[in-house]
Amino acid sequence: DAMVIQNPRYQVTQFGKPVTLSCSQTLNHNVMYWYQQKSSQAPKLLFHYYDKDFNNEADTPDNFQSRRPNTSFCFLDIRSPGLGDAAMYLCATSRDLPGVGPSEQYFGPGTRLTVT
Amino acid sequence: QKEVEQNSGPLSVPEGAIASLNCTYSDRGSQSFFWYRQYSGKSPELIMSIYSNGDKEDGRFTAQLNKASQYVSLLIRDSQPSDSATYLCAVNIGEGSQGNLIFGKGTKLSVKP
Image (cartoon, rainbow over all chains, first blue to last red; front, side, top):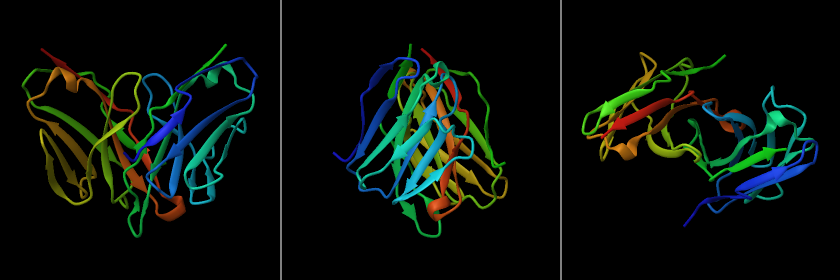
């Protein structure tokens, strides 16, 4: 089945220790997104890739970086995690509908990040 | 600032009743509208998409769109306890590389047996 996969599902890291979260997709969608979601809040978009074009949200901290080496894979790097970065990190994909905008987004299961 | 507004709830309905979830959006140019269901600790799951004014039915779910009023709703008929979750409304903004979805904060639905 076509899907969005995230690894690991749970990640524990120490304060200030870099961490990388990964996402892969078999949907062949050209757009990939990274969201941060904290308890009882809406998903907050960090950045997205439209094909190879990187689009950073204005309020995404510099501590967060992303890489997309190919269509199928996307990585989220947190360079120096703080306690406030503990959250669920969601990867999503969509395809672009010409003249309409992004189609529905399909989410991976998420990675729950704990910072100690 | 483009926004999507939802009542946070909780919305409580008895089993078998109709649950009505509402959403308003600010961007008149939006053309795509989505409803997601999110169980606690899980990722959002797409329930419905709607692109044209009117109603769209899928099983127990009906999405309603009124672009003139900038309003989209989700009706859940014959509500079941398993429908208890947070429902997120999402609206597209922009096109191409600038295209994105804006999410509301979600409405928490509780279906009582």
